[in-house]
Image (cartoon, rainbow, N blue to C red; front, side, top):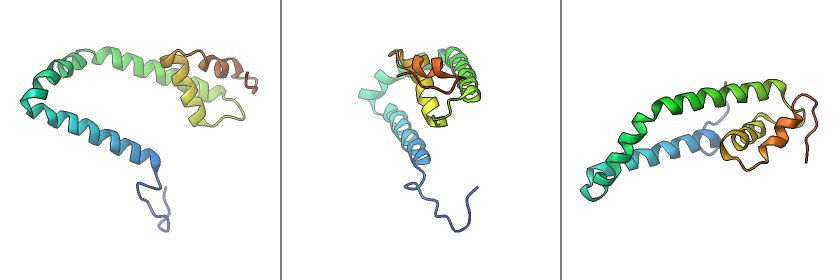
Length: 112
């Protein structure tokens, strides 16, 4: 919770700023549907994402399960945000570097 002396602004809370910026860009994209040249091309994309809602839900729950498990096991010198980024790299990106954090879970050493 914020103290009454803390100044809560978007510049002081970068996560909130990122969420607001993302939301505004999505709102702009939705507003572009009214433009006939753009809207006719966007409508099939919007309709296809609605039908993929189930797979997004399953992916979100699976990601959350892995993230919670990784936070519970933890690595002593890694913050929760670093574990989050490495979980994204391990499950979604597939660049091969996320496995280093997974191999280090439980024993507290980071493999380099």
